Image (cartoon, rainbow, N blue to C red; front, top):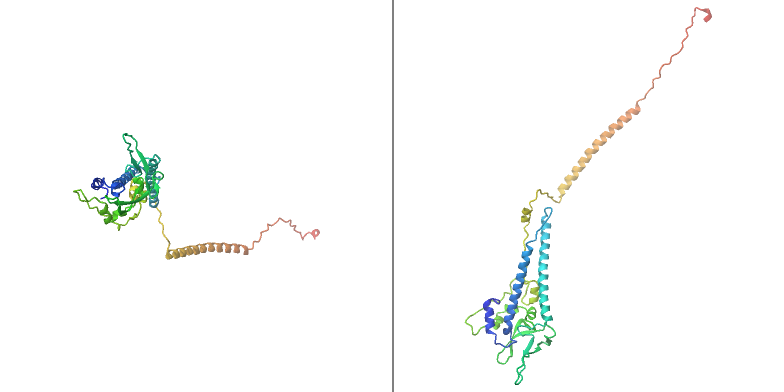
Length: 323
């Protein structure tokens, strides 16, 4: 409601003739600044997303589910970090360049300007003087701020302080240090909204502080901007689509399980049973060989001596000479 075209037109038409330091006189620039930041961030994210979608995930083999999700998460986080750094660096460059070149504020919130009046002479000369806010000179520091207030038109006296909003040397610098507390409060909204000289009636709905959000009503815009005004990044990882696109030729998998007590006991018994069987076989073979060896030792081997040829003389007893 606070950045739509109707609201902006009413703010501009209603408060152009109000005292220059009144919040309503420069609030149009505040809302335009918010729109500019939103559109810049939105454009930055969309352009980077287009480039991100051209990335390809390549693997020689099919990546496991856990590893795939881990790698994609890392890739997305790098993408988010890159977007933030790119935008914030560019934004900081704009801020630094604006102040370094002493560029004046379009809302005339940093200097007073006046043309001297000399009797009988017209001089094209404009004098400037730095505005001092809370003892801080805009000619020395570009982040000087003071609380935003509403003034009475007749005597320029303050009668209402806008919660969380600041007026500074530059609208943008003051906006970064401001919060959106006012836009959560219906009373504050009624104080700043246009009510007279308009046939259009607008009743903006206050922001809901009860919604679950990381940004509280008193969170500064600079903190919100550092997160690119994003509440939460969400992305989904579809491993099934990756697997289908990969089209593997074969699949292998391992199944891991913890062995329970029954499995362990039966396994041990099985091992022991196999060991006993093996020992029986080995021992029986050993005993047979041992018995054979013992039997061989008990058998006596008697060598056979071959008969030698002997000369035998026969005595003829009938011959007396041989007696």
